[in-house]
Length: 209
Image 1 (spheres, one colour):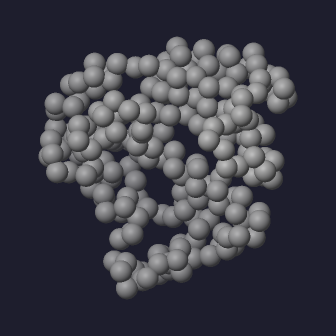
Image 2: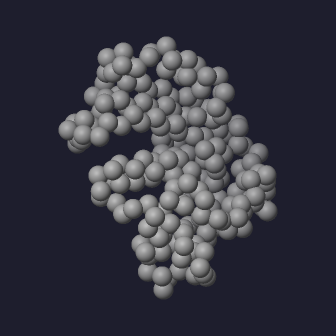
């Protein structure tokens, strides 16, 4: 889940059936059905639920499973994040610059949704999965260009810094498969100021690349 693990994670499991779901939208809420009625194994879902509740997958806050446009399983998991991250919130690190105006400070009470005591979450890497699903559906419908399309073709290149041949060759497929060639040291903690997450924040915005 990437950076999101520092403030809890949401696990979304979507079982999408193109067309069936579309016929049922828009609705104010998901229709509810039992897993068995949607050809799903309840015991397997409950076993997965128990594993999450036991902490086997870290700080996950919720699991939602949609099948054939119907809500078949939903659970929430409570964690005392004040206790879990209390020390980290007071200590300067790669993720916490102790700068009230810093947009990348995941511990700023004014910035991060968690501290507002609501259900909103900063998803970070979860967005990559959702984006891949959406692009996959759009591609199958011929509503999105071929994955070999260059990334720069979607942007005003005048606004992009440091364009070179590597960036010109970078395609949508490269981004979806995380093979765009950006250097990243996986062996450093996100809290380590030497981590690329801290040093290359402009890269993470995506537009300056």
